[in-house]
Structures are given as C-alpha cells and as structure tokens.
Image (tube, rainbow, N blue to C red):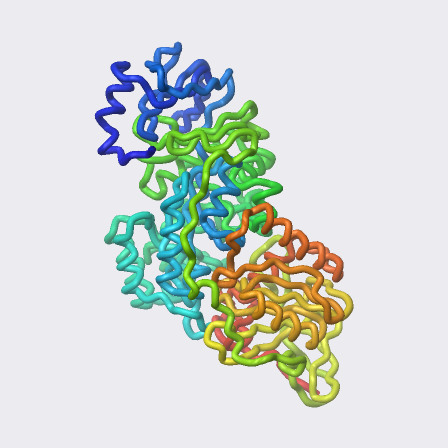
Length: 593
C-alpha cells in the first residue's frame, strides 16, 4: 500500500540501511537510471510502503520471510511511463477502464485533462473524473479544465467553467495544474478571465498547460508565453518545438490514434542535438482500439526510437522529464529512493516489450495480463442522461438553403493524421432551393445539451463517402454537441435519433439501416464496459466507415475534432461555421448565382 513519503520516511531509512526487510525486492536487473542516462547491471530494487527504499548492487538488500521477490534475471528495470498530456474520455472509457487498458503497457502515471466531460457536466463532471482517478492502482492526476467553452462567443457548452471554479479546484487533492489553455487569442489579448485562471494556478504552485495552435511565432506567441503557459502539445513541426523550448516552455510531442507529430519534431534532438530536458512525450487522444491493439506510452517510446531517438533519451522524455515539468520529480519519474515504486521489466529497450509492471509497489501486470482491480465509482443519472435533442429531426433539418443555379461555399478540408483542417471553397449546384453536395459531404452540428432543437449545417471534404449514409457522434470536441457527417439528410436524421436512443456514442447508417455503433452512455463520451469490448465496437464502427468508402487512418478521430473551434482553419459549432484564423463566425454560402 502506497503511503505518503512523510509517513514512509522512517521505514524507508530502515530498509535502505539493511535493518529491516523490504516489502518487495526486484532482484538482479539492469537499472535504467534516467538521472544519469545510464544502464547499470547487477542491481536490486528494495521497495517499502509503495516506494523505492534503495537500489543496490551485489544482492545486498535485506530480504525477510514476507518479502515478495521478483527475479529480473538480467532484464532492464525501467521507470514506469508517464503520459504528459491526454484526455481519458478520448479512450471512450472511464478512468477505471482506461487504467485497466494501459497498465499492461507500462503506463503508471497519467496527467489527464477532463475538459471533455467539463463541457457536458461542468465542475461536477471534473470532480467525478478526479474521484475515479484517485482510487486507481496507478497514479492518475487531473489538470483542471481551463476553457469550457474553448472559445467563448463561438460555441455553447453544457456547463461553462468559471475562473472561480478553477481557483476552487486548485485546492483539490489530485489536481496537478491547469488543463490546456486553448483560448490563446484571449491570453495574448490580455483577457482578464483567462489571466485570472492562470494566475490562480501559479499561485497554487501548479503547472499551466498550454495550447498554442497558431503558426504565428511573433508578438502573439510572446504574449501567450508571458501569460504563463508552461508547455504546448500542439506543435507539428521542428521549428515550432524549438521555438517553445527556447522560450522556456516544455515541448510535448504527441503520438495519438490520429495525431502523428513526433517524427516531424524529434529531429530537434536527433539532428540538431538540442538539450533534451524540455522535451516530453504524450498521447493527447488515443481511442480504445489503439490502447488494446497497439499500446499506450510504450507505443510512443517505440515510435520515438524508430524515428532515430536514443532509447534512453526516449525513456527520459516519458519519465523524469515529465515529472520535473510538473514539479513532481521527488515523487515520480525515476527508480530512486523515496519515489513511487513504478517499474517496468523488459528484455529490449528498443522494442520495449512490457513483461512485468510494478506500480506503487504492487505487481499489477505480467505478460500483458492485468493482475489488479481498477475500481469504479457509481456514475449518477445526470451523467447517464446527457443527450437532449428537444425534438425529432428529419431530412429537411440537414439542408443548406440557397437560391439560384449554383453556390460558392466554404468547405472544411480534412487533413489525414493531423488536427488542423483546411478552409476550402467549392462551387456546388443548387436544386429546389438547396445546395447539393458533389465531391463533398454534408456536415451538421446538432445541439444536444439544452434540447433547443438547433442544427447548423455545412460541408466537409476528405472522407470520400459513397452512397446514402451518415456517421453521427456525441463525441465532438470540445463542446460535445452531436456532429453528423453524411451524404443524405434521411440517414443523418436516422443516425441522430439512434444516438438519442443510446444516450450517446457513435453510429454509422447506410440506406436507412445501422451498420455499427459504440454506445457511450456516460456523458455521451464514455463507456463503463471493459476496454476490449469498447475497442471491438469501435473497430466495427471503423469497418463500417471503410465500407462506406472512407480510407482515412482512424476516421473516427477526424470526425470528432471537426467542431474544435480553437484549431485552424475552419470548424463548425452550434453557432455556425467558424473561421479559426480570424476567430469569427462566417457564412457557409459565400455567393450564389
């Protein structure tokens, strides 16, 4: 059982001095020391009260009759991996389900920002996520969401987060800092509400998460950094990462289910030879299928190594660098005295097969098998009843009206494996007072928090859908209304109705029939079913999407970000089509003739 260091201190001293036996000893391994970037063979780790008491050579640890001994047999003893920035809800799982999915992959600490549920349920949703996180057998720390809505005036959330609520949450146990400050234009402009949130976080001695999704590295960027953001995970190129670390920020390089941004940035280390201490690895958004089939932070470390990174550097960026960034290096991030006893055993630092996982001094996974329970809270009815359409929708609700023969329209252009979109323009025919898509798909944002019955329509390009079909999702970052993409209004209406019946999730319709769905009844974002079951349902949705003509990698992730009004260039919200380069609402139809 993990004890706070102050309570464990005396016993750690006794075990380290050899005067008392350890609770657990990992014997005869190669110690991966992330402080010195060394591998030291022939060492034992002594653990007491969930913490490392000492790491010593020559089998000199005191082993008593009740000491659990794990034979490393020459394997590498690696610190448990830390995800520097992510959103549990993107896994379509609650914190308990997410922990159960990632523990066998060697993740022992997660810094998660529950701003998805914050947009649906407000501060109460954050508290529920924090509560379930704190009872897991690994360390799950919460970053208090900063922007709900992410861009005030451009979208409407279920429950807005206030500066006062941010200040309140900074006093909660398990809150490690402020979640990504997405409203970067407001910070750069000196908006008092945003600055107040940052100031409350800094006053509490905690870390401010950044999100500067703009190529402008001039005055606006300088103002944003001066405003207090400590890191950024929205970098997609080497120059952007270098600019962050030069200004004293942490550069978080991400590899999620759809965002593949490590390779373009890691050259700052592998080719330019920059100091690595300000670089970290994260996932940001990984859905259940990726977690079950490909891994979590172990996948990111392997990818960094495949991109030419020294394995020890990659491990540092997934352990001690992150712990230091959050001011927790005395508690996390290395196999050294006093730290939480989070250890991976593996035969190969490059391929990183995770053979055994110890978290907080307990053996929690072996050979891919979870060995511990991940407790769940009792999610209230409010969380399970979050889809409110207000009325039955029909095909006419998914029309873009116009007069004349043809219309020049704005189109959201999807970019595979990247979060940004392109602002495109297309000329489409008009028939019976409606713009008819040709070579593009319809997109709609259906309000689902207040039951207003509102529907905003537009066009999107890049999915390649064929036939009469629709994909609908109540996961729609960040405001999490219902987003629907399709080729005909009838199927879009049917898909919307199905999600209201399920209480949230993702569904695919073709020719009036459902092909597949994944039910996400908790806030319309998460399932309380086991990860493999959710992953199987999500993969069925992916197959259905491919059967409808889409060849994009992980098209679900592309779908759910189409309403993210803080990443350029063009998005859709419940208030209209949003030009994210200007941060203003714009018309879908530019001109008709």
